[in-house]
Image 1: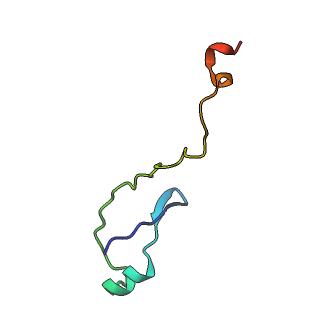
Image 2: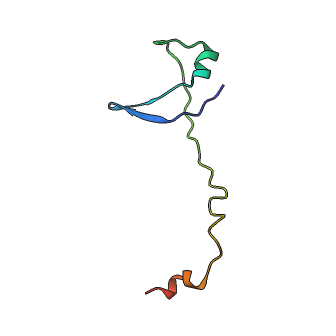
Image 3: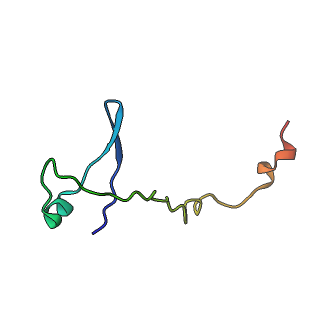
Length: 65
């Protein structure tokens, strides 16, 4: 089971939390040694500019001084 979680600052270190569903599924206990694999989650910007509207004459850079 994979989980997406956020990195947080904890003193001078960084820490991640393990979701309770994963803790229960793997029967994890405090002080156990585990192996983790890190993959950065890419943000999806698809559709982020859909409400921007059409390009107008007033938006042209050469018209600005």
